[in-house]
Image (cartoon, rainbow, N blue to C red):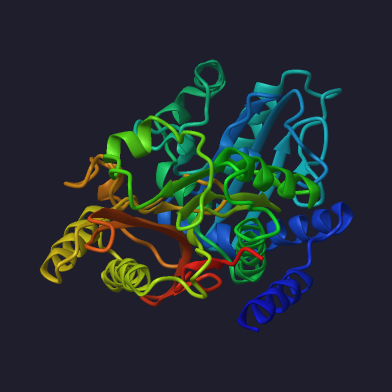
Length: 438
């Protein structure tokens, strides 16, 4: 009866998490982008103290930030695309100009007439001189790759063509670029809830008797099942998923073996504890999720109590981490406090939580890495900002006397950090998924 209820709920959830047609996605994407340009970007430019932001890219070699600003009908930049944002704080205006042959969708208008001025760089210089900005931000950054999208050729040509009096006004737009990438709007969060629900639904469909035949189905079969389901739904995966197994007659792998040597193909058996790492992309946002399932033995009707209790420990480590997330704290501070608290409570935690949003491994506050549990230089020193999303990724090692060995409860869920308030984007796993073989 419980299994039938779960099946009904799953079917209902899929119907609720509607996947839009390509045309509907395009309309939504452009609406979200317009909202970001109008209501978010002026705030970000003021906070970064930059009144002009230049983004310069050539086709097929796009700055990752510029790529997030292209409309739905632009899959790439065209020729050399230059975008100029000019913020006049006194007038509370934000100009969005394209030094390009075309308007960039409806959001950014072309400001270059090539017939009147054939030289694109001279056209850009005129726009800059006419507005006389105090600071000209460009996307260069030593430590944040996503904020380092201006290639050397374009950087050199920009400086060669700028009037001399403006060269010393060119500064790194690192803070502004990270802010653009990491900050989520209220409209985006509505979409994010749908996206996470779809992710959960795909996992539930994969971790089921419909897809698993013990003694025959392999972990590799389930990996490709995930990939195929995403393709069938008209979505994309941003990384190749993994499925792995923990069982009572095998030694727990080290962190290095688990994270750096890939996942070996294994046949799934009854009594196996399954784990997946899976994420999808939809309308410019990404998910990253790790969940567990247990293949019930013939004499079992539910997940064994010792595994239920072990899983609760993983949830508790999540709670410890998210309770330590406060505006202004650095990732390294949050990591240290959470590890100390977790160990005091008797856990063996490892935390490697990362920003999530426009990119899977996004820019923003990094809270540990699996091989950097004493802190992450520079990226871990970046402070936590509100209205940001994170993959709450971690594990805790649990001793199981029933199996005579240790296991790891490895969890990852999308979480939203608002105004000093944390919440999961669309719930988290609190129970291991039971796979009942008919």
